[in-house]
Image 1 (cartoon, chains in turn purple, green, blue, orange):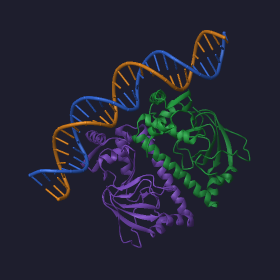
Image 2: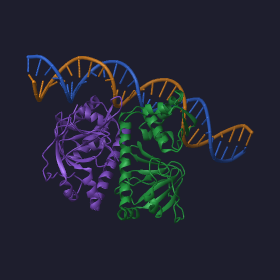
Image 3: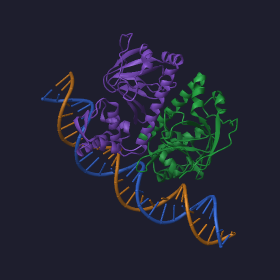
Image 4: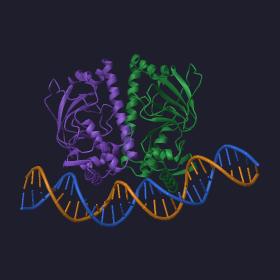
Amino acid sequence: MPDKLRLEALPARVPACKPAATKPPADEFAALDRVGTVVTLGRGQALFYDGDAADHYFKVLTGAVRCCKLLADGRRHVSEFYLPGDFIGFHAVDTYLFTAEAVTDTSVVRYSRRSVDALASQEPRFGRRLLTIACQSLSAAQQKLVLLGRKTAEERIASFLIDLIERGDESDRIALPMSRTDIGDHLGLTMETVSRGLSHLKSEGLISLEDSHHILVRDRDALEELAEAA
Amino acid sequence: MPDKLRLEALPARVPACKPAATKPPADEFAALDRVGTVVTLGRGQALFYDGDAADHYFKVLTGAVRCCKLLADGRRHVSEFYLPGDFIGFHAVDTYLFTAEAVTDTSVVRYSRRSVDALASQEPRFGRRLLTIACQSLSAAQQKLVLLGRKTAEERIASFLIDLIERGDESDRIALPMSRTDIGDHLGLTMETVSRGLSHLKSEGLISLEDSHHILVRDRDALEELAEAA
DNA sequence: CGCCCCGTTGAGGGAGCTCAAAACGAGTGG
DNA sequence: CCACTCGTTTTGAGCTCCCTCAACGGGGCG
């Protein structure tokens, strides 16, 4: 069980962080960075819990964060993995909808909700940006609904890998900081099925496993075809 | 294949529509209604297609709309059903993310994106309301991810029914305007499994079938327990 | 070295899918 | 009013994909 998170002495200036691949440089966030605090988390530590009052937003600097929901009997679903540059919690209304935990040692910037909201009122451009972020999360969620509702195990795994390639900064090498169980809980599969799926993709020559947490993409086209349409 | 949609002579005043159960009266939308046009659709007609430029938003007045995505090989996923009072397309960024079709004969109000955006700039309260709507959709999507990722067939069906009770205006009677296939494509199941699931819930005494499109809830607590936690 | 966690691989079983047929309701025409 | 059709729902029987349970292997750490 994760314990308390550590707070670093807050620097006046938060280190800049590469914006996600598809986004234009985020000038809107210059002001935001000035109100952020850097927080570091050990592997497994929680950033916040499902149901907590949502009074902070976060941005990942290094490492990775998983957001998950638990059912009463222990079944778990990982709704999303957040990588460096990603924002967390911006769409929380009142309380957080899930628990956020560090997948590995991780550092994030923490913004108080008050200052973000104030900024949004003052600067309309920034407010619109927030709306855009929310809309993008929504479109990502739609994709995932199709994935979970209608794709086979192997198609889900391929989609997941393609997604990571697009978000990562290398074109043919994927880092998988999370465990097979995490991936399974994200894709609606068991860790055994994930493992078998990766082995099969390897035996078909679409990927190769550098080690269990680093994948080399051998045939991206075939992988995209598997991940498929729409 | 659905053909063109019919446009009514636009009334200066759009009929008021009951706001969704959980929302406070939507004063913010008074101004909005003045810029809307009523459109009627026959069963199966499309409101817009996946990929179309998103230059209109909609609100359902009567009937029901399903929004779906297709995979290349024809597999379909229904991301959401929209009932009277629900807004459609408010979170589209640039193009629509899915195709919207009338489940039955349906009427909707159509708002041009320009006037909505203008309204949002002029009136900050309204802008914030849009953000809230987007956030609510997002939280609904999260729930669906858990459903598709981790729930059994019967749990999915129970969750679906509970959701409809909460959105409907009767406490123990549910109208199902959509077909079993539609429901299956929404829940990540086949129509046979949906039908079997409903039959089983009936044989267990949790529901009874008035006719194939109207359900009476006999034991809501048990149904909620099945739909379950989180 | 020994322990533990994690990933891989194998064997068997089950929830839900596929294919098929029967039941039902609504509409249509005689 | 009945006969017929067509679309939808229900029910049945068999199969498949993925889950479950279990054993094995390797890397990190005390």
